[in-house]
Image (tube, helix red, strand yellow):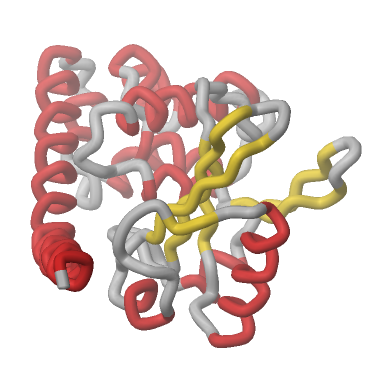
Length: 225
């Protein structure tokens, strides 16, 4: 929403530097909200450092049940110190400065197996392209060429930035099809990219899900005892 690609959401995602001090501060903030952990795993450094997400919830007097998801590691995303160095600072009226993931890092975090993330990724890059298409920087052009998922816009971008697209084609092979103006091949290439990322995300989460199931079984056994 802060980047202009709004969706209806009742949760806040937090990227956390996993340290005892930060965990204590987060727990104090959650306590002030009256928030609780809604599922396994518990809020602990060992789980965050292994890549688990900790899911919390609280009841807001105006918004109803709200959710907070906390992560310290994300697949396909750089470690927190790198994310922090690249962060974007946005000023919100009545709130103050809010530190958020840079747009490229946010885009990387959206390449999951969840259906809802792919339309959001597409919209995020579209908004950036339409907003800054006349305010060019090398970083923006690179981001668009590597992340645009709208076939017509990708064809347009490769036509505009042909030299850059040719340099990046080894990193994103479908740019060669876009440079050739073959839209059907671009559409097929986008589908292959998405399928590969979904499979990589499934493989990443498989052992973590096995851990969660073991935690659930242990919790049920303890309750039964």
